[in-house]
Each structure stands twice: as structure tokens, then as C-alpha cells.
Image (cartoon, rainbow, N blue to C red; front, side, top):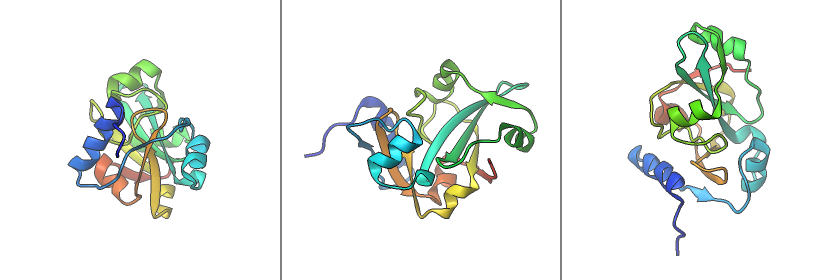
Length: 159
């Protein structure tokens, strides 16, 4: 018997099906909020975890989504150069307003608003990656090559 997903995790599952992906959202008994927690929970390398980070353009105030390998730290100046304006980390209210999800559970798809999306090139060195699925303990596994298709993201260097 399959357990029912929480409403936020179900939204992500529905979005995955919309893209024709057979990925299954799994709600874990423990937190998967950080890359280390997620890697420990699913038994993969930290680099295989997709950190979904939201930034804000300092001039335009537009949302920028960065899908980053759990092993990497974002170089904000480099990302700013790539999009043509300085960026800053978004606060919790901005993240929820743009994505519909709380920090710690933001998935790489299914957001309220469309945002410029940048994908860490290092994620593509893995066959499969794990991403947040709407809550701090929900995740799903997908082929790394599908990240760009589901997010309409541009592959960049983030570190």
C-alpha cells in the first residue's frame, strides 16, 4: 500500500508526471533539509544532492533559481556576472512568494512563478541526482540530464 503524500510533496509529484517523468517522491522519516542530511538519508554522495537556492537581483528584484551540487558553494559574484546584475540571497518570504515552497523543501520545478534558472555544471557529472520535493523531508531521484528540461535551466559554473 502506498502512503499518501503531503499536499506540497503531491504538487511536486504531479509536476513530475506533467513532464512525463516516472520519478517517485519519497517522504523520509528524517529531515533532508541540508545536502548532508539528504545524502545520508538516501545513501548517495553529497554532490548528487541538488540544492535549490533562490537569489534576488539587487537591481531588478527578479527571482533567480540556482540548482547547485550539494558539494559546491555558490560564488554569488560569478552568478551575478552571468546574469548581468549583482545578486543576493533571497529571504524566506521572497522564496515562498516566488516558488510556493518554504526554504529547505524547494524543488527544482513546479513553482508559482517562472524564474531564470541556472544549473551547476557539476551536477551533470552524475547519472542520477536527488532533489527536494516540497517539504524538508521529501525528495525524488532523477536523471541529471533531465534537470535542464524540467527547469528550463542554463548550465553554468557556480563555484
